[in-house]
Image 1 (cartoon, helix red, strand yellow):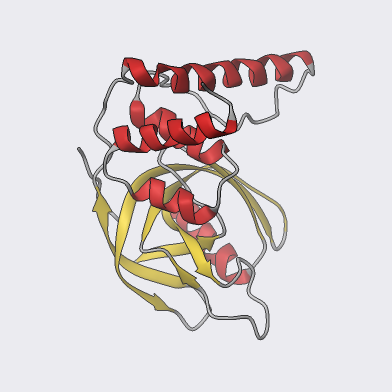
Image 2: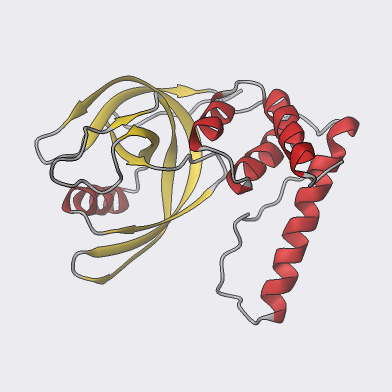
Length: 215
């Protein structure tokens, strides 16, 4: 298992979703607090932290309940950046290192920052034979999506699963299914927090079996 240094303090972006390591995250940013944060991160080449909201909304509204969020999140590295007009940024991010919050603070301008420590990366484990159906189903889905994109001429359309593909790795396969499955955010968060990539894949396999995607 490996870890990587974290920016201290770490700027946070609470969202109504869960970012997994290796996951693709496109964002349209228009709130002043995040325009400033993303602009600084892009200029410095540093990541920000994505944490899943447990209370509140992504966009701050007058009278809305206070934001609360999960204690474990994932770093987001900005891979693509565009500012098509004043007050709007469009970025594409890649999830990398998980982290655990030690403390968090709300700044005067509405941005959350945190002191955080890295959570070790998943151990690289081959998908065992009894879970090959889970990996094979993901491979078929990706092939179908790629073929559909090719036939429709949409080379600029992003696939929900990004290369490089690692269909033989427990953690990678489990993470991609966690992103794709229509399950509650709270369940996705619990799956992301699991230390064992094999256990995460086993639980995903159970979910797929219940939906009839695998048998």
